[in-house]
Length: 199
Image (cartoon, rainbow, N blue to C red; front, side, top):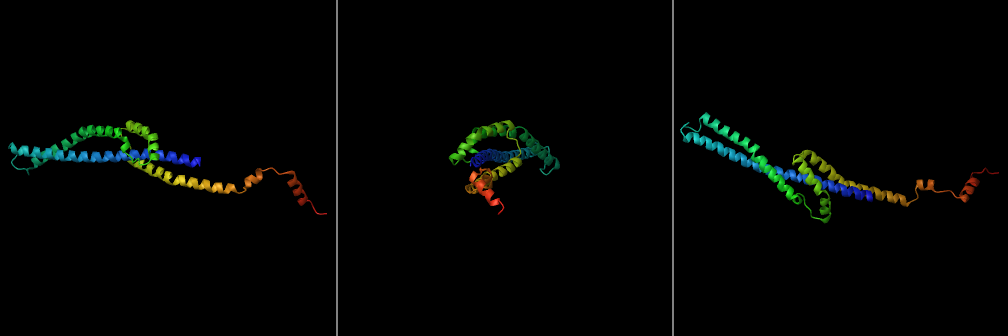
């Protein structure tokens, strides 16, 4: 039973550790998606303003002019590059620190058991996210999470089942017990008489 408890406790802790990492990546991916959408809209607006400015200044008279279109596309691309190099990184670091400050919200802690397990791995989650900066393979973590979660749900049950079956076997008289128990003198005499040839 100690073996089953050991597997259950540690697999649950590893399960929560990986669950927190997956939750972190999910939150970060959603944040980056919204940020990129905002950047694309801002870049397109900047490109449109550049096109209208060329027409307003009399440089070109039609918005369909290829040079006007290429100018708008160039400004849009340049703004997207700048957005990816500066605001995305700046806001990404701020969001990373924000998630570290409210780490307890990454996974549900509806029971006292999950709260206790989370307290045991919370520090490891913080250290890992600080060390990696939140940059790690989501695919690898997801695969490891599913493996550990299966062990947590099924492995403990299988171990307990095996231990119960072993306990049922040990209740009876085993072959090992027969071999290890000493033979009394009376049993030796009886065995010799039974094996002696009849006269």
